[in-house]
Amino acid sequence: MQQKGVALILVLWVLSLLIIMAGSFALTMRREASIVSTIKNNAQAMSIAESGISIAEMMLSSPDPFKAWKADGRVYEIIADRAKIRIQLFSEAGKIDINKADQQLLKSLMAHAPVDEDQQSHLVGAILDWRDPDDLVNLNGAEKEQYEEAGLNYQPANKSFQSIEELQLVLGMDKAIFAWIEPLVTVYSGQSQINMQMASKEVLQVIPGLDQGLVESYIFARLRSAINNQLPPSFPLNSIFNNPAGQSNVFNLVSEAVLDDHSKAIINAVIKKSEQNVETPFQVLKWSRVTANTKTLFTAKMSELLVKKYAEPELNN
Image (cartoon, rainbow, N blue to C red; front, side, top):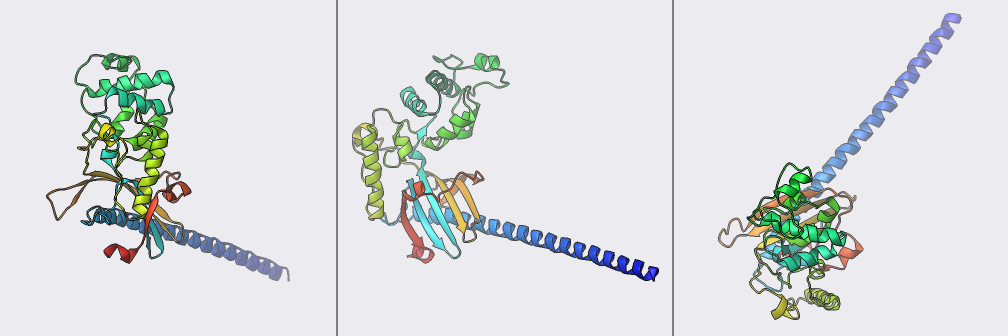
């Protein structure tokens, strides 16, 4: 009788162990299935976001000026199967070229940056010293000696900035200042002035001598013209502030895809339009996936810049 009791206990113990093992296996399988599904959905979102860049290239090339997309910071939305895509476009001619901007424009830019007044002048001087070909120190600037004193193992390039990211090496620049400046500046314009028709509201707000009320009314008028299928209006005081030669064939695009299960992917690309190569109308200069969770085109603020919504088949008409 005692042996039967022991055997029963052993059977119950084995059954309990098997149940625990089965439960653990089932839980592991559910987790793995969830991971696989997430990877699959993220890959699909990335693929759709990439298609948004291709669509933007097509719409930028439209021969119809009323259908062609404009690169002044406005947002377009495409409703596809199980997904929405939002695309924001910027012309690099509507930004401040850090290789060409004069000292006054750089001062005005820094005056709006999140930095104290004393540091503003040092940053302006350091930017000028980085890009000029000599070793003479600008007022409040920085050349080789100042970088050595700061304990840095490099010195100013003494030539034009090759990329926006190079700004991070300038003495006095930090992550917060660079993050604020990055959307407003370029190395692709090649112009000392800004194409005001293509400039975003944030760029217009830092240009010296511009009334902020004028900026607000112009941005509103420009958005209304897009919504009503009209050509963008000229900027008021155009002859004073706008550089008519500042037409750029380089564009910065942000494409975000959101699936119906909330999976999403964001791509930031800089592309250059080719005037000769018909088979490859655009050259990719920069391509990156945006991973910061705080960046999204699907916000109330971005919806204010939304000018067109398309069902996917409408793009072919």
